[in-house]
Image (cartoon, rainbow, N blue to C red; front, side, top):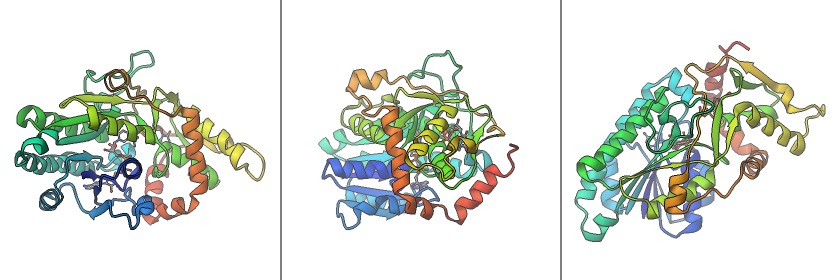
Length: 355
Ligand code: NAD
Ligand code: TYD
């Protein structure tokens, strides 16, 4: 079996669902269930014995060791993290604790476990660390996309904490020989995306008749990857990635934020026309920019394509349509995640921004 951390979050839950749809290999899912972790994402697996959910912290060494001893996983996939840049600006502490200290503690327990494995079990073991393109910093309009050899230049507490975790993973390979793989992804989107991030926030706010807050001039560029393409990339890297290597993974879909918001509005205009027949674009509001806002991310995914033959299956047009449709069909999920905690966050992040 495999051990997935953070498997109740956006990407982790998509990965677990996708994994168990593709294979019968069981998954232990270790997740502390922060505001971003949601067992409802895994409702389709209720009663499925291949999925073992464990509520706990990657930084709880005793718990991690007991899971490793009991289940003897052949691989660990580390998705667990604090993941939202704006939250890291308001309060970096949790990011340091989970992304750096948590990853360090996890690596320590995994190292001890791997050291005691024998023969094939030891040879075939993998620790796959899920990271982000944000560790490379910000590109200007004309610079080439990030490759695996770009310098690390993280600019937010979030990306700095992810960069630190990547460095620890690298060091555990170089110093102790731990068989690691690191994957740096561009922005993901798709089902179960928590509505604090751009795409789900815009869909949810549009439908609720609220404003669509575009930071600054809306010309910041992100490179969008549909989440199931991320899942297939991880499966491929786990299967055939070279130990100690880094793989950049993206969808070749660079878009300015404003284009994304316009696309979401146009899809909603079509699929759920406003009562007054006006466009949802009417709800767009320009608000004060994010401090230290990275201007552009872009991933050069040539290495994984050439070495491992992986390519994304979705274009942005197909992926965004599926995403908007999913949110329209899953209004209960949206209502359930908009807890008191969510409302407090919205107040904290948006109330002070001048329009
Ligand atoms: P998410 O915030 O939706 O989910 C994170 C999950 O980790 C949650 O279920 C949470 O409960 C869990 N978690 C947090 N702290 C934990 C701890 N100490 N112990 C155990 N579980 C803990 O994040 P996501 O968007 O699914 O991102 C998953 C991973 O992918 C992260 O490592 C993130 O940095 C990386 N990533 C995300 C994106 C993106 O666009 N969302 C892009 C590139 C990389
Ligand atoms: P986000 O989804 O938070 O991902 P990241 O910061 O990790 O790239 O934001 C994506 C882009 O959208 C980013 O440039 C910030 C911008 N943005 C807005 O303009 N308004 C918003 O309300 C949010 C949440 C993000």
